[in-house]
Image 1 (cartoon, rainbow, N blue to C red):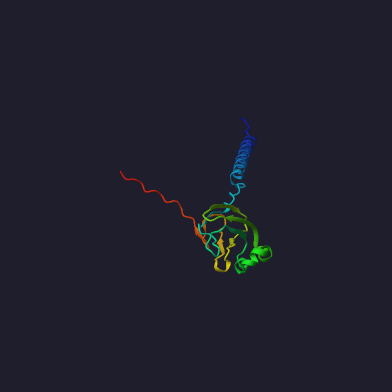
Image 2: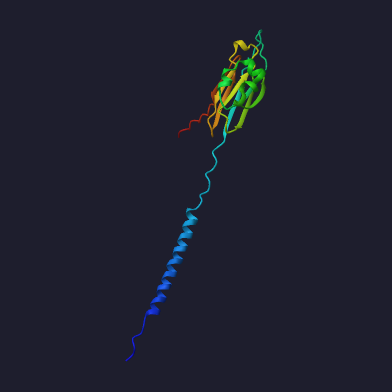
Length: 185
C-alpha cells in the first residue's frame, strides 16, 4: 500500500502566492490612492482690485471771479481708512497731506485738467487700499465741494465717472454700454 501523501508543502505554496498577490494589489491601490488624493493644486489667486475711471472736466470748470474757466489741479489719494481724510480741511491736505493722513496714506498722484478735457484713470491698487480720495484745488475753494471719497471693494474692478463741475466733484457709477435692440423679421 502506498503511504498517504502529505499536502503540507503544496498548500503552503499556494497560500504564500495568495498573500503575495494580496500585498501587491494592496500596495498598488494605496499608491494609486495617494496619487489621486494627494496635494491639491492651490486655488487661483483672487482677481486684483482695480479702479477704472473717466475724469470729465466741465467746459466751465473752475471759474474765477469774472466767470472765466481755468485748469484745475486734482490730487488722487489711495487710502487705508477714510477718517483723517474726511476730517481734514482743504489747506491741511493741500499743504501737509503726508503728516495729516499718516498711516492711512498709501499713494498720492496729481493731475491737471483743462476745461472740457476728459482723462482716463486706470489703476491696479494695493491690497490694503479701501478708499480713493480726491481733492480739487478750486479757485473759489470756500464756495466749492472740493473733496470726494470712493469706497473701493476688494478683488473687483470699480468703474466710475468722476465729474469735475464748475465748483464740485461728483463720482458716479460708470454707465454700461446699452445693448442695441435687435431688429425683428
